[in-house]
Image 1 (cartoon, rainbow, N blue to C red):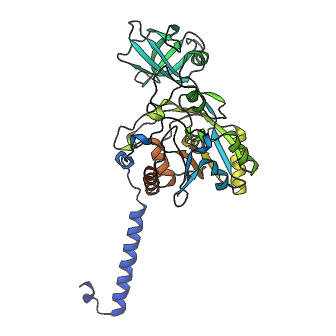
Image 2: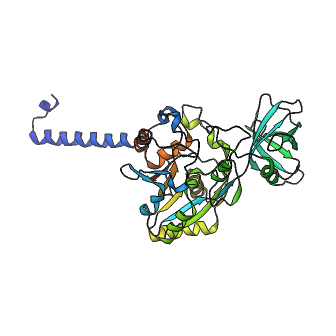
Image 3: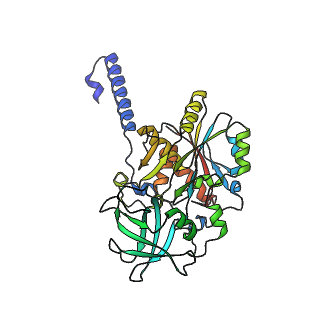
Length: 389
């Protein structure tokens, strides 16, 4: 009906083309508007039996979902076939400490501590300080002296004085002063801090857990949780990758128990990430620069390595604390390929994966993993992903 008011055919065609271009431009503008993701966007049905309770008999015998293009089911030891000379693998070389400790209040009430980090000695402060989560029916008052048990729970082994909350008066964690060196006490009396979804009696950790909830290249003590994607690597696989010209470098990020903290707000922008300490050696920074120069790919082994490298890219700091929260729309600057485990619904780790490989692709890959019976989370299987802009 509009065109009957424009008598000239040429004018009608010109007006139509102008309108068509305007509509096309409008659609393009709409497509560039970032989607506002909600917590419910990262929910999916995960059968409980898919949460791995034990590791695979052999580290590199875990399954590997190659999700770089179409989903391809592989075995982790196939990894050398999927990489190429000149690529750079970056690992997190943190070492898990036996950070779970059990004890009692002066009243006799039972409690559990999960040490998050050991604090450096500060002038004028009590020695042997740690920051920890505390699980107890009623929180003791500052100044309380807790009696901490030995590993078997049969006797009191040391004391822990509660100094207050951390990092401030309203902080979610607690600051303690131990009666001796914290790392030595944890090595002697602590328990492997397996995640809450791995079911174990608190005094019956197996020797297999002690050995397998640790990477083969763990070097720097301080983590309350393992960098689980790296658990799939064993010495023969590392040697095979090195022989074919895939370079290897490391960073350190002491994984905190906050990695298991649920997101409680439907608006994910309101979620506040826990803070973790990281360090990147100068040799690793040089290896990354050399890799980029020769056109190789930087492969991050695990989400903790991603968070470390991208924190450095944003801040320029090779060492410090990071609370970086990676969600869809994040602009990656360093990592080209990601090796990661399968994560739980509504987790910040799943959001990072969606940011890296694309939300729709993440959904399709996870649907495939559930259908094919892949094993999830710390003791589970792995996935190989390419970055999608």
